[in-house]
Length: 107
Ligand SMILES: NC(=O)c1ccc[n+]([C@@H]2O[C@H](COP(=O)([O-])OP(=O)(O)OC[C@H]3O[C@@H](n4cnc5c(N)ncnc54)[C@H](OP(=O)(O)O)[C@@H]3O)[C@@H](O)[C@H]2O)c1
Image (cartoon, rainbow, N blue to C red; front, side):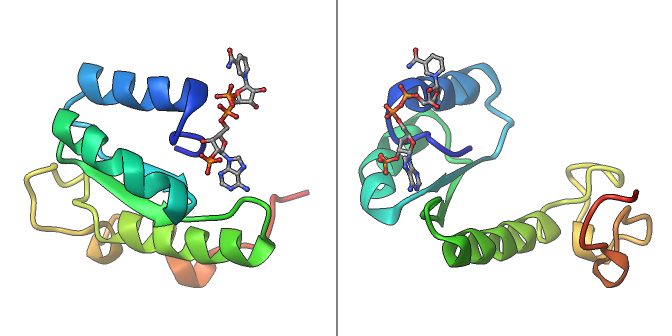
């Protein structure tokens, strides 16, 4: 979630964690802003991660995208069951291998 450090995003982030304790929330925000809110969010649920991003910087967005992809790859594969030790990156049923990822939508 972007924009979770204040305003409507902050309210939405807390609401998601309260309503869905099984959710893992990834806060995409500037480190200077996120540092103050992560503790409060983790008091609601321990399943909160932070990825540093400045949405005004293309380089920062690209770096955050790569970090987010790593986080998703290391998550438990839900096709195999959330309690499975199989990670998304190693699951044989993985839906989008990195090697075949395309750079844009098909015409
Ligand atoms: N408030 C409402 O009732 C309402 C209703 C309908 C739609 N909206 C829309 O919802 C959005 C958020 O509204 P809001 O009132 O919650 O605004 P806000 O209080 O100004 O919050 C903006 C959020 O965006 C983040 N942000 C801004 N620039 C960023 C950047 N360069 N990199 C990373 N994060 C950045 C801020 O992070 P920092 O803390 O780091 O600045 C903050 O978390 C807006 O697009 C608004 O038009 C709001």
